[in-house]
Length: 232
Ligand SMILES: [Zn+2]
Image (tube, rainbow, N blue to C red; front, side):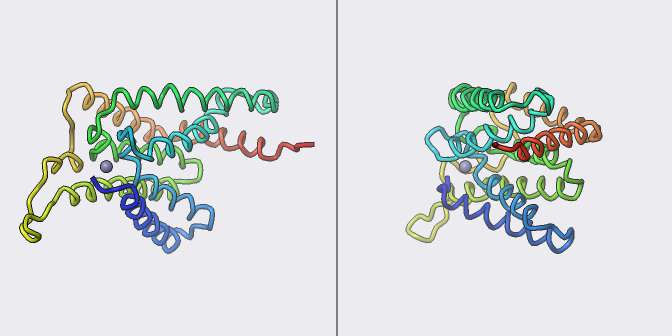
């Protein structure tokens, strides 16, 4: 497998390319451009979430343990019930659950170069990104989805390229890991079935996107209200 730095660089290239496309065709502003860039970089490292020893798991779980509770806030609390004591308890509980329980489960049940190194997983992640950004409009959601999708794809391609070794310095040979990154399915019926169901469910959510958009817009308005809470 290619190393972490190579994957970050791959993600940076994809993120930068989509920022360029976004600015040129959709007139993205600075904040939107940075978010798209982040999606590209995130995609570049995301498939290695299944690598127990790597850096991606702590980085991504740290990010997710802030993003998920923020986005769910609209569902669990009304604006009036959001007090400092509620926020502290809420975020700490989420942090502990996501970092220790969910990460523990991921470490235990994922196999390196399993389903997370596959095209369907990249597609599913892109769909999640679309939902995450839909309240900022279809253009933003689509660019974010493409940025993270191609970030994941470049990761898979880099891993495959890394499995080409040169015998005597010039005869290309494939190592045993060849074909384990850029693939459509993995070993085990249940894992493939689960991913397929997740893709169908997420696609359905996107096509009924008015509901998703409403939920996400409400989540955003709650976040804006938190940010406007005066400390004094
Ligand atoms: Zn990898």
